[in-house]
Length: 141
Image (cartoon, rainbow, N blue to C red; front, side, top):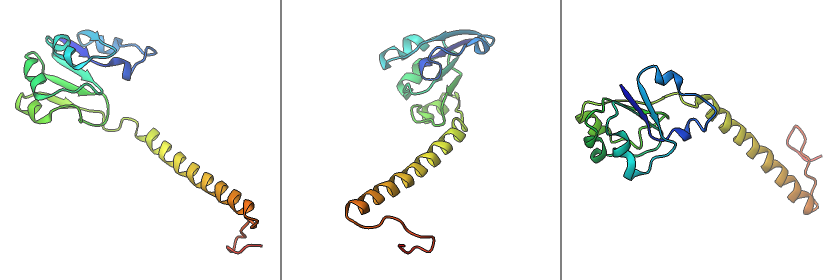
């Protein structure tokens, strides 16, 4: 089986190996693929992996050997699912990709916003001659 990765740099900037995929067949990895090179690079592929390379109906119909498309991210935004279904292609994604790290980022960003807002409010109050401290009861000392 021929496996083609169209934009490998997005998931592996060089610090990981592709050996596990090579055990399933011949593997060709491209760091980035502009739209005009999708078909020439993937023409013989049975399995195609991508993160953000757009796979339109026009592109998918030209890939006669293709049986599988793997989106190496959470969404299917770049893949024409209707065309894939009509061509009997199996399309998968990584539904839990980054779930924990995204949650952590959101919580950290929210907390940072709270802290930043409090600091700005205190500074403004000090600059305007008002006591920025508030007691546990919510009243100024």
